[in-house]
Length: 181
Image 1 (cartoon, rainbow, N blue to C red):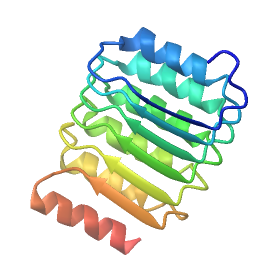
Image 2: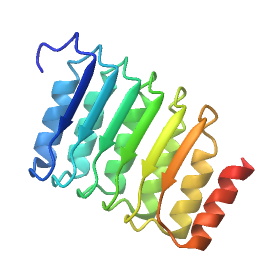
Image 3: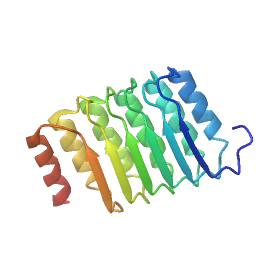
Image 4: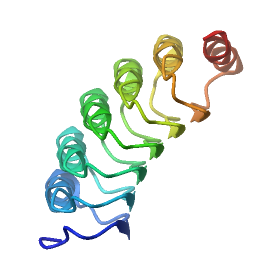
């Protein structure tokens, strides 16, 4: 991808290959050269990507200043609270991002990572469509409530799909928070 300045659309599937932190960071570095990229879909599940790897990937996305449509399938990796927060901060700097599908299912995000991710996504000032998969991350009641409070502040969102697969009571409380705001 070294001479990919004119590339506008990239889609790649690379699952179950154990690319790890170095591979994800390398991909981020390569993507940083794609300055005209508007559409990106990365399917990187089950690759042993850690906090450092997803942060490196996110850092590369910052350079894709025209990116408006992003699909990231990062399920079943080793992404924790720090990685989710770092990715969120990077996504917040993608100022043209309007459509985001982010699948972080079956990682290690926990009670601390979900609200950090939500708070960062609030900074995506052009985000109108968000699909967020966070099930199997030990988020719990407090994390879900804080995530809901953060996402309720996304004033440009017109469509939100959030999958936490939590107990019914937690899901009800989260829905009430989003409806209230």
